[in-house]
Structure formats: C-alpha cells, structure tokens
Length: 214
Ligand SMILES: C[S@@+](CC[C@H](N)C(=O)[O-])C[C@H]1O[C@@H](n2cnc3c(N)ncnc32)[C@H](O)[C@@H]1O
Image 1 (cartoon, helix red, strand yellow):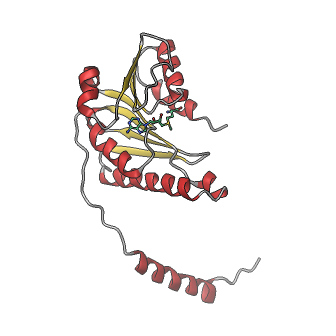
Image 2 (tube, rainbow, N blue to C red; image 1 turned 90 degrees about the horizontal axis):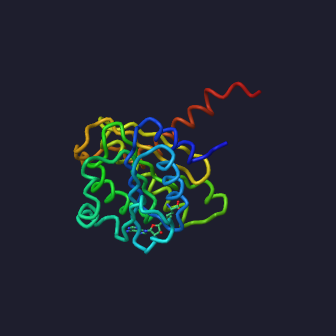
Image 3 (cartoon, rainbow, N blue to C red; image 1 turned 45 degrees about the vertical axis):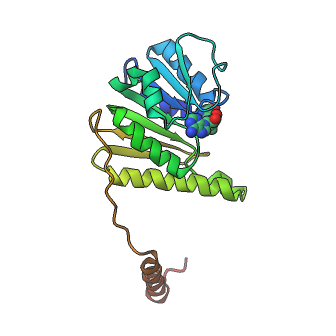
C-alpha cells in the first residue's frame, strides 16, 4: 500500500532527534503525524502557516508561527534553532511553482547534509482522470520546477519521486549545511526539433522495423 507517512517515517528513522520544519499546517494532518513522531522518537517540530493554526495542537512542545513562509527574517528571529540545521523540510503551503522555487532558494541553505526535503502533491494523474485543468497544471508545473532545481543541483542532491496518488517528491541532500543552491541555466533541446526528429523515427519504425505483427 502506498503511504506517504510511511515513506517519510522511514527517512526520519535515519536521523536521531530530527529537526523538522513544516511549511503549511491547515487542519494539521501532517502536523499531527510529525508531532506524534517526535513524541515517540525525540526531535523538534517547527511549523509555519500564514493562517492562525495555533489551535491545531495543544502542546508546549509544538513550535508554531503564523507567518508567510517566505519571511525568512521573521521566522529565524522566532526560531533561531533553525540556523543549526534542518533535518527534514516539508513543503506543503502555497501550491505554486514560483513559490516553491522561492522557498527552495530561501530554505535549502539551512538543510543539513543527509537531510531531506519533501514536496507534497507533485503528480497530476489523479486530476487528469477527473479532467481538472487547474490542479493538473499546478501539480505538473511544481513537478517541473522541482526537477529543474534538481538538475541545477545535480552534484548536491538525490531526487526520488513517488508517483502514486497525488504524488510526493523527495530530495536527499548530499552537500553540507549552509551550501547555497546553484542557479545555473540548464541546456535543453528545442521541442520543435524534437517533434521533427521523432516524426522521422516513427516513419522509420513503421516502414522498416514493424515486421513482427504478433
Ligand atoms: C495544503 S494546506 C497544508 C496541509 C497540511 N500540510 C496537511 O497535511 O494537512 C496549505 C496551507 O498552506 C498555507 N499557506 C498558503 N500560503 C502560505 C504562505 N505563503 N506561507 C505560509 N503558509 C501558507 C495555507 O494557509 C494552508 O493552511
């Protein structure tokens, strides 16, 4: 069975007393999962939401701040412990490709070596079945942004995507804490040339290679 929490738990189990930084609380589904984890295994949970979600959990051990998650200055003032390194960054706030790119450019630097970044909802298939235009476009564009960031930081990351359901993407950071992400432009082929090339490949296949009918 596909279970996002099981996948994340397996990664958390590789770290002792993890520092978890969660972006996007809402009604607390992921917050409760992370909080139960640190209660049972140790660690600290820092959660951010632009709305007041402070009632989601009733514990002094939970660190919640109502803030825009791009407001790095305010968040670090409130939670200076994050400067020491984040073991797991969970990105599930504003589902928008440019927002995700900005989050990576702000928070990647604070992720520890051998730490993880998870992105929730990165697959469009479920929404394409329902012919939901906007959610399909958003999930595909966020997925594209994540893949592009990975290519830009190929020497610093291992990237895994879980396709089932609404998808989950994972970065495993192999570079040190306080390493800035690369911003280099990645070469890509011209899609028009790709179309023409594939057209001739197809022609070649049907004319000369498709002899095996059964
Ligand atoms: C998809 S929900 C989070 C779901 C939650 N992680 C869960 O598993 O139940 C997205 C949340 O992100 C919050 N949000 C949207 N834009 C934000 C921003 N710029 N900074 C912080 N939180 C934001 C919304 O208020 C909303 O509660």
